[in-house]
Image 1 (cartoon, helix red, strand yellow):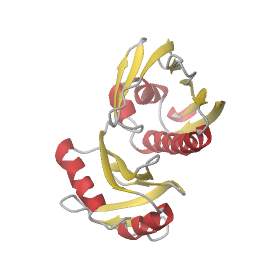
Image 2 (cartoon, helix red, strand yellow; image 1 turned 60 degrees about the vertical axis):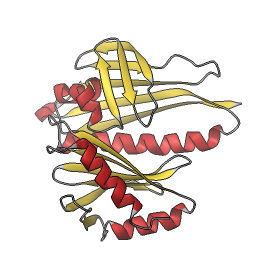
Image 3 (cartoon, rainbow, N blue to C red; image 1 turned 120 degrees about the vertical axis):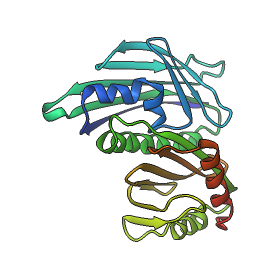
Image 4 (cartoon, rainbow, N blue to C red; image 1 turned 90 degrees about the vertical axis):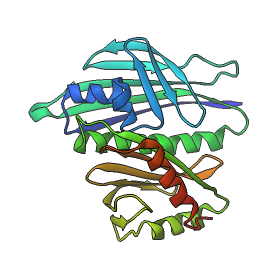
Length: 241
């Protein structure tokens, strides 16, 4: 048993087609809004590395500044995922980006995975739009940190909101040993809080069947290992369980 899926979204962003292409078709660009570390072999493959997971997607369409498509080969159980991006320039340096996602989720427990994937995709698209509207032309260092395992997510989420000092759409807090964070919430659902600051995008989320996570994008010079460890320490000393 399993489920096929397909979705299409349209983003209108204050970025040029070239800036949009750099965001979706280069490793540093994808690093700045997606997750993990990414590598693009122009016209051939897109590779990702995240938490020990290293998928490779074959490029099926490559027209710089206009059209990009890539996807995984079907696994023995039928699992696959594919992405397509269509870029259309508009007046005054703005762009319409159409994003299509399709694939197949196998197994009797496909529903839980599909729900988590749908929520994740909504976060990634909102982050891509935020990146292009506010940070186009800049590249970020991705920071991923894992906190404690979650057994009561609503309780954990409430503690997380308190820890980041949320007041309406604003947040203000100081992670231990790191610069203060002063930002605005750009996206949220029951599993995710996304925050935009002047020089960073911060994301806190519920890991699929796992821990509370931080998946950030920092647009200033940092030591990646030291910064990730600082966030691991912060997540694990905030009594989030």
